[in-house]
Amino acid sequence: MTEHVVHPLPPVVDGESRVLLLGTMPSPKSRETGFYYGHPQNRFWRVLAVAAGEAAPTSRQEKLDFLRRHRIALWDVLASCRIEGASDASIRDPVPNDVAGLLRRAPIRAVFATGETAGRLYDRLCLPSTGVPAARLPSTSAANRGRWPEGALVERYRAVLEAAGQERDA
Image (cartoon, rainbow, N blue to C red; front, side):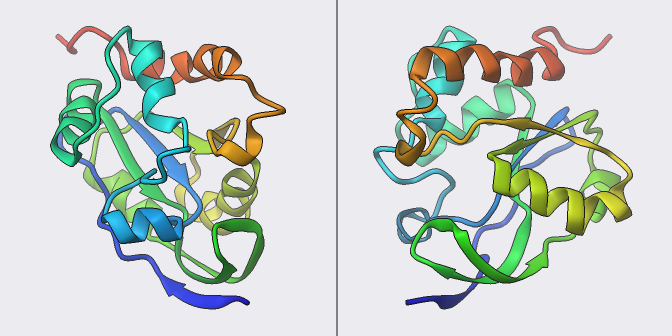
């Protein structure tokens, strides 16, 4: 059964953010935990941590610190939609977040969509106002495990850290 969901989480961004990662909409588990990629089977945090050569952050504060340390902003393409559970394929009536406004407020130089649906929705709903193309990354969802083993995800997600730059801007 589909439900109307309004995005409950603010973007994670600051004046040091260089890369923006965009999902589609927080899953029911993420909405329950109050933070992005909150389902324990989602490989997002583990994949990014391995790509960075670090231990995976577990607490909300550790995740915030990880994002800030690596100059990564995090948000979702959609402000609201009708969705069944966590199924991106079921999304109907999508309304975009103000990604263009976020890009005007932070020195972000690269945008990545974390999954094909996020990429398609970004291209259709956000790209016309941002003018910034989003590189597509594979979804880290457990449902994508068969198509994308963790090692392959780590290789693809290294592009996020490279785009953010490991050294501080001079």
